[in-house]
Image: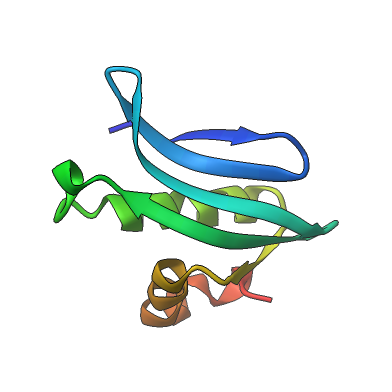
Amino acid sequence: MEIKQIDNGKKGAFYVEIDDVKVAEMTYSHAAPNNIIIDHTEVSDTLKGQGVGYKLVDAAVAYLRANNLKVIPLCPFANAVFKKKHEQYADVLT
């Protein structure tokens, strides 16, 4: 499963497409030069139970680390994942 990313400098998303249909997406906004806010995560019912939401968060964390960014996870799902994996993700939290 390939996680793709789009970013226009103001907003962006990590997403999964199957047959050209977006079936999972986590959106974010650039809040400051070095911060992003994750504001929404949605995964199609067809992918439930496959850990796709976690994979979207992992992709975001890799992006944050590669670009020396910090995150504010406002999305309830993302916030729960960051709390659950706090030790692994502490370096990217604001």
